[in-house]
Structure formats: structure tokens, C-alpha cells
Length: 447
Image 1 (cartoon, rainbow, N blue to C red):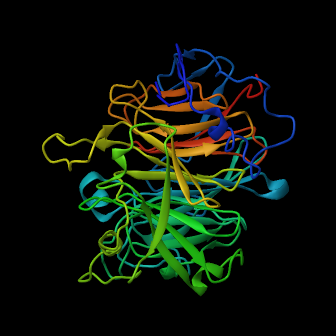
Image 2: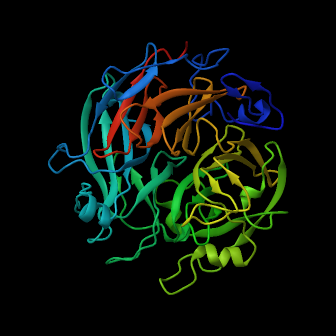
């Protein structure tokens, strides 16, 4: 269940403050007229899958495609560790999917994960093994092609779509191979990836990115020792289109007033806190320099454990998640935090410079570890969990009611990269197993 200050418990979970969450449900970037139901409390019980792969509500069905190790269009193998993803219109051809592959060298040499093969003109570091693939899905659901679009990067975890229709893929590592890593790269669904890193957006353990109405980018950092931060990047060329982020800008980190240690201190959903932003002195530190987050924390920025997904609300607000906090007495090997939880959902209002804890997942909740999050035109947000045990896709509707939408019946591998097709009829999502694969889920969304 989820506990909030302005909520009451239901058998299906608890009610998030509807006045806040409803501002993001049905984001204008995704909503289609007439598709959202008037009431939404989920789609009913999950039906056990006879194939033992994916439990869904009655009437929904899935299709598996682009599995790790299969042949890519034009040769090579589908890389592994499918992660963050976004869907884009391919006009009459159907949908593009740009998909991350969170692969590093150890994954390949020790675990046998399939690396992203290098492609001429789209490879950054000749020694690196991560990157992106771009898939073309026909309107009838058939996979038309899947090809490498960016290579030579590392640990491409999440990212986010830009206002001009490209994908930003983020490296969740600052390792150095033949070249330094820890950057953001841009991938055009039509033209492929630009192998030149967007250095002004900072070198750190990037997770995800979303954009405000004015073109400001908001970035999450999943890091430890010390914990990561929330950043904003104000581009010199706002809303300038493909390639414009390379022109530079201002990188700052979030400071939440009244927080002494880290954001886990906030345990009351509905609490609103004033914030300010502190400049990052050196946004592109070398391996011997102080990391970006250490510099910013030294200037007062507020740490957060497991900062993960972020997305933009239709009102211009910015939402982000924290998957968990270990608490002051964590298990051996884990870093302590001021308090413990199994997930937080935050909303930042750029107009008032205020931050609200919209939802808190307490220790012991059935669905823990909120990670990637997406919104669609059907009256709910969808959370990919990365919890301790069973893995789910969990919906949160406009009234804050929480419901399971899908369960990974085939194992405990996490869901990742959930994204709705531009017409809202298909949900695409990855399961980051071994082998990893992508799913297309269709069914009676308007029910």
C-alpha cells in the first residue's frame, strides 16, 4: 500500500493525494481525446499465464520480440540487458522504439551478456560494450527491423525523450576505458545516435532525464558513496532541436531546505518543502577530480538514495522517484540513510520552487522499489518495480488507488522501460533477464 497525508485505505492499496497525481495522469504529450475512462480502479485480478511468463488482467495479451541473442536486421545479435526506452511515431510505418542496453565489460566477460556491436559513424568508445538499438514496429504489431543505433557507451540505464522527438540515453557509470564515460548521448529514431557526448549535461552516474515546459532538463543520479542528486540543466539554446544541447548551458543541483542528511528524512506524504539550486563548479571532472556530486554536496545539495525515473506532468511539474532507502541500521554492506522506506514519489513545481512528497511506500508494502515510470492516456501512471522479490507493473490512478497490472511470472527480473505507443493502444516494456526481451501488451485499455 501507499500512505499519504490526504488519503484513506482501500483493500487495493491506499489513495495518493489526487490533487497532485492527477496533474500528471494523461500528460498532454501522450493523451488521446476520448480514450480515458471516466473511472479507473484497475483492470481486475491478474490471470495466471499458462506459459508462465506474464500474468495480466483478463482480456490483455502480450507478444515477445527482439530477444537477446536473436539476429538483428542486417546482421549481428540483439544485445542484452534491455532497459530504458521510449516510443516515437514512425508516421505510416508504425512506431519506433529506442531501447537502452545497460551493458558493461564485466557483464560480457563474466556473465555472457551480448554486447552492443560497434557501428561505423555511431560508436563513441571502441572499448565499450553498451548502447542503444532502434526498433521499427508495424501498425499490425509485426517487428519490421531492429538495428544498433548507438554503440561504444557503457551502462545505458534510463534516459528520456526530448521535446523535439529524440531520445537521450544516459550512462550510469563514470568508468574510463579508451575514453571517459558518465555522459548523455542523443539518438534520433530516424537517423541513429550521435556518438559525441553532451558534455555540458555533466559527467556523473546518470539515470533518467525529463524536460520542463521552458526546455530545462531535469536529471536523476543513481549513485552511492555519497548518494546521488537531482540536477537541472538550463540549455543555452532552449528547445533548440536535435544537437542543440551541445551548445552548453548551466548545470545545478537540488538543495531541499530543512534537510540535514538526505531525502529519506521526509516520511510524511503531502509535505511541501522549499528548494533552491546550487551551481556545480566543474561539470566535467576528470578521474582524479572530485566527482560532480561531491562538489555539489559540498555546496549544500541534498543527497538521495536510488534516484531513478523522472517524467514531466501536464502542468509543467517534474516528477521523480526514489526506489528505497536503507535506514540508519542497514544490512551489512549497505549505506545508511536518515530513515527507511521502500519507495518515494516526488513532485517538483518549477514555478514556486517547491518539492512535494506525493507518495511513500513504507517498509513491508506489497509493491516496492518504484523505478521507471510512464504515463499514458488511460487514466493512470505505470510504475516498473525493482523490489526485493516479485516484480510488477503497478498502476496508480487519478484518485491515487494502487493496482497491479502485470506480474513477471517467469522469475524475479525487473521490468524496465515501460512506454506507451503514440496512439496509446500498445504498452511496450522490457524484462531485463537473461536473456532479456521486449514485450508489446495490448487489450481493453478503455475498460
